[in-house]
Length: 312
Ligand SMILES: *[C@@H]1O[C@H](CO)[C@@H](O)[C@H](O)[C@H]1NC(C)=O
Ligand SMILES: *[C@@H]1O[C@H](CO)[C@@H](O)[C@H](O)[C@H]1NC(C)=O
Image (tube, rainbow, N blue to C red; front, side):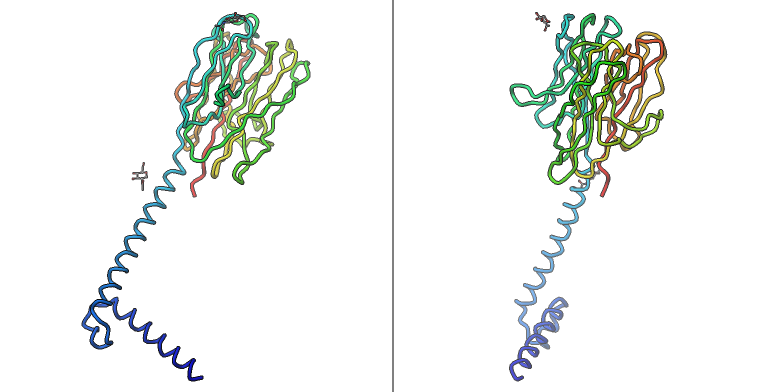
C-alpha cells in the first residue's frame, strides 16, 4: 500500500512538471524546476512542431506522386515491305510499356499481321509490329508511362479458330505486390494477315468510358484469316483503375480515320482499331489521341484504354 501511494505521488509530480514547464518560466521557482529543464522541454516541443510540419509535407508529396502519371508515345521506324518485316520500339529504362499499336503505311486492306509486346534479348519490353503479305510496311507505336510502382507482364492467348469472327481472349489473372493486374493495352498478332481487330472487353457505346469486363482483351479473326493470337499488357499499380472508350465510327472510305481521347483525369495507356469487317489498317497515337484507320465499306472504331490512379 505504501509503495503504490509513493508511485502515484511521483507520477503526479511528473505530470505537473511537464505541463508547467511548457509555460513560461516564472513558475520554475514555484514548482522547483530548473531553467535547464524548462529549456529542454521547450526545445523538444519545438522539434516536435518541426517534425509534424515535415510529416505534413511528406504526406502532400506522397499524394502528389501517386497522381503523377505521364505517358508518351514512342514510334518505331517503318518496316520493310516484305511479309513479316518488323518495326520495333522500346520505352526508356525508367518507363513501363502499357500498350503497343501498329498501323500499315500502305498496301492491301487486309494485309496487317498485327503487333505484340515481347522481351528483347536485353530483357526490355519491346513493341513489335509485323508487316503482312501485301502490306507496304508497318510502324510500331509503344505507349510508355512513368507511373508510380507500376509493374506489368504480357501474357498471350492460344490461337483462335480460323472462322470469321472467331475470338482469342487473354485474361489478366496474376497479382503483383498484393494488387490485381488489369489490361492497360491489348494487342493482336497473326502470321496470316486478315485481323478484324482487337479491344479490351467491355461496353461498346461510343464516347463513354466503361469498365473492362473480366480483365480481358479479345482479338478477332477475319473471314480470310487462319487464326489470331491476343496479347495483353497486364499491369498493377496503387489504386489503378482502367476503362474502355470507343470513338464514333469512322467514315467508310479507305484511309478514313476515327479518333478518341480519354476523359479528363484519365490517361491513355492503349489504343486499338476495331471492326467486324476486316479492312483494318490499324491504330496509332498522336499526342494523347487514339486513332484507327479504315479500309472497308463499313468503318472502324478507335478504342482507347484509359487508366487512372484514384486519389486517396
Ligand atoms: C504538389 O503539386 C502541385 C502542383 O503540381 C504543386 O504546386 C505543389 O507544390 C506540390 N506539393 C508538394 C508538397 O510537392
Ligand atoms: C524484310 O524481310 C526480308 C525477307 O525475310 C529480309 O531479307 C529483309 O532484310 C527484311 N528487311 C528489313 C528492313 O528488315
